[in-house]
Length: 148
Length: 226
Image 1 (cartoon, each protein chain N blue to C red):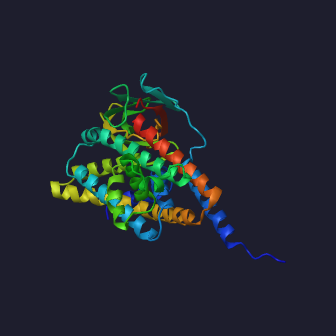
Image 2 (image 1 turned 120 degrees about the vertical axis):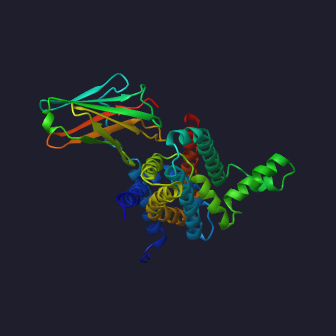
Image 3 (image 1 turned 90 degrees about the horizontal axis):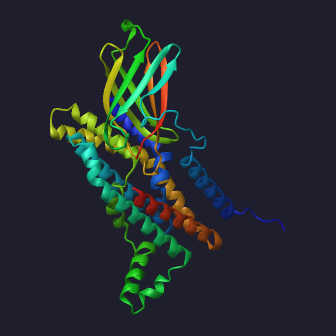
């Protein structure tokens, strides 16, 4: 006797697959990035060719849900090509946290400053990435852990 | 439409699939597994309540509220809310496994037992659809990184406005659009889990109950850890 198609079984399998797929999406941080900058220990330095990009955040320890001052220093850039302001983008690797940008205003001598807030993720994740795009120079990324 | 409104909607649409389902999924899963009829209306009311809270939060930020002060004043409430939600999810999970003989408690003479029985009965089957709107309002206050970021956007937008009312409305609209963006994923997920809950039998239902139970424990731990 030929068995008919088990619609219920197909449905259950389909629904379970969908739930597993969704669970996979929510745990999407498979490649676990690690901090390359100890922001609580001091300023962090990245190089774009001969240019040095230094990020500092105060007060320390750097905590989420607190107002923070962000400082960015560019070394080795001619004064006439220094951008007036720089956008610092804060993202959490492996977790969609929305657009959180800090505008850093320059002093004309390569030092930029702005205020912002790093939000807290209730999942307990503390790794954040600060990215800056410097027109005509390049980009730099800093991966750091916040204290809480 | 200003750029920030589009970004808020997009943040909801993209975040709704991964972030919101990861964070709010356990709550939706727990109540969806026990829904008996009127699933879509229940989910719609729950999400409307959640978006109502977002509007309120965005409005406060837009009207000149301090995010840091607001967040610190809400922290304790949010931790209790997270732990409380976890406790409710645990009760649902236990009831689903059959480890809480709540039907027997209902007819027992012990007042504490009757309370547990009534509470479990409420969670498991005796709910009116109208309950989901206030439930959504409450759950809208759950701590969520994506919501915090959108609140910051509302605050920044409010700074550019000339008055409290304009700031409140603009900040609120940012959050409404964000919440609306999360709707498709949340409604679809709720619908799928409700269907799953009504189809599962025997061993699979008990496995789901254990998953719900684990989710509840994670929520309680998150609330405890802060």
